[in-house]
Image (cartoon, rainbow, N blue to C red; front, side, top):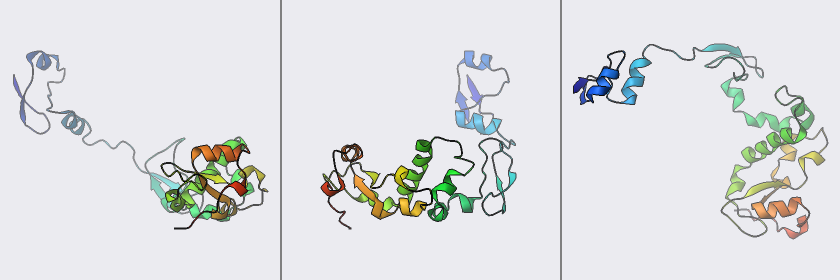
Length: 186
């Protein structure tokens, strides 16, 4: 049977049994046309007014509730502002307060990856493997004093570029810092 798409008016063929199953009498040539027609005039997430926790500027976001944004777009993507924060200040943030140290320190390692992206193009400093490398802190995050700045902890001078195997060996005492050659800058 030939029917007309209720959204784009294109004629297409549909089985008689499918036409009879339709409760609304509407037929669509594709899922895309169905979605466009059914969502006309609906606004899923109306903008919600917020005040940025960092700069106190008003901004609008599309979400409300548990997963809602607490910082404006300018502050959300300014990861560099954390370079001057101390480990203590970071541990006292409401988003990480009460969490286990290893969980919090994983956030600090994420800053290292973000701030030192250019090091990802280097091969492993020990074996030269270049398909996948990881950042390894020479001095562990947990060994730093609470007054240490995140920029100091994640500085290039405290980061080794190692493959997964060499990283594991370094973390488990099978490799020492003396066994790993200095990084050759590009």
